[in-house]
Length: 142
Image (cartoon, rainbow, N blue to C red; front, side, top):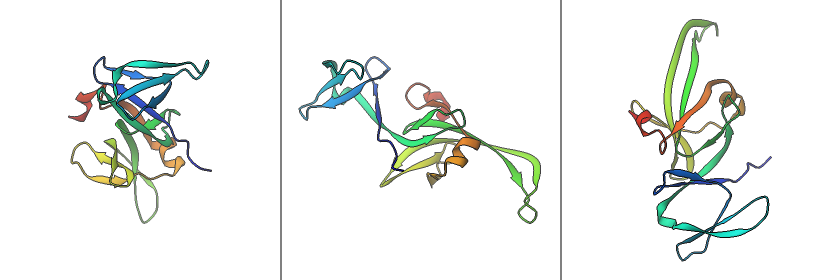
């Protein structure tokens, strides 16, 4: 099944997410289409005041959509490789979802290490949680 292609936009001027279908005219103007009425209105800001981010096609353990720029918390249990038994110790790591060259990746916040975004839904549903994003919660990057 192909993944759903969706975007959202952060308005850097008013510091809010813009909802609805975004339409760009190529001249720097942005229009919004209301999905319920199909009415298109010109948005008051220009394209360069928006940060457009892409939906990864994945959802976290709370069924929340994961977008580029989201900050994730990953909690997992350590296991013994020989026996596959849990050790009782937990690992908690934080990641930023980034587009890197040709794919979505996760960038560890503590060391900047980049890994390809694993697209197995079972991994995301069990271990990852969206706790914010780089636009509304920049303090989480520290």
